[in-house]
Image 1: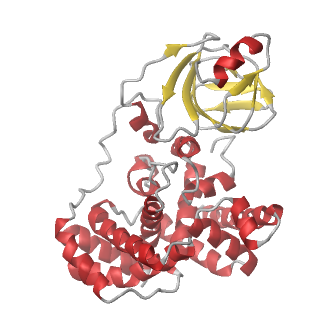
Image 2: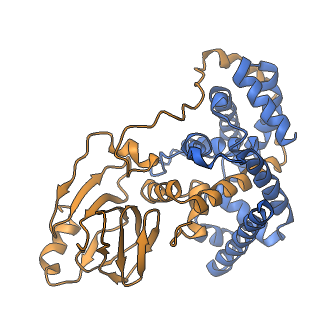
Image 3: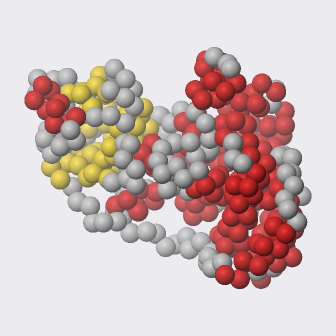
Length: 187
Length: 217
């Protein structure tokens, strides 16, 4: 499913509560959210629940989705992330939802050519993630999907903490470079 | 772009939801004020989206979709974002901070002559305050036992490490000792998130530290 197709489906849900659009989105994303949550150490049953809750939240919040601010996958990722945290009942975790960042928190004056930007950023990040060397992607995936501290990742992978930190730093460096490249192209 | 952004690793922890409430609030306030950091957080969320999209699909039981479709009628649908509706709160408070200030918080003068608003979190792992210093006013020299996150919300301050202005993020850790002084101009307002009480190292320290440790002041 392309980013545009997914965004069209979310908008169809927002505008006319389109159940066919919802079903299509569900068939694509629910199994992926389930995989994502299983990676975090959840059992299949809880992961299924998180996937369901995530897609119900997509239905509920469809009107707040703004394709100019975030790609559909990005938005669904942040919802799934919050749902997984709820599921783990970590009471020390933030009540601050990053999905709000993608909708209401961004200041108005930044909106110029934002539509191009959100799509470009997503496409660039997708290329970047697909092109990361295996050792970096393994660490980054753990950071994203398992919500683990660097120390926990190091212990689990049997790596020295310094190695985990430097792999994360390398991956973040590539991400920064990609953003800078984007800025240059805009000029 | 501010001169002192939050480190990328911390922005990553924020974007993936790995930070406890206190530090998450500090990063959220910084990100609200710093376009470059906001861009990085957006990019990190996009990377999360890309990873999600690239996941192999785990099979779901066939009836799962039917179950969910059956539940949708009872799900209240939220209206679209009302961007012009700004939550109430003082001008200097970035949006993520405003819900925490809703119970009519007011400045209280504390020892050392500066003013403070204490912010209550849902969790009590961190001590969160807003400090207000008049121009030229300093905090007593102190060191940190653990991490301290500072975000400047109005005015600015300087210490041995540099000058910090609106949106800047400072991460104090461990044994570093510093003595911040508010810059001339407007009063300096900063959000401070502490993992552990600070230790005063000046001449009043031995009297005040026990009170700080107990959270009395």
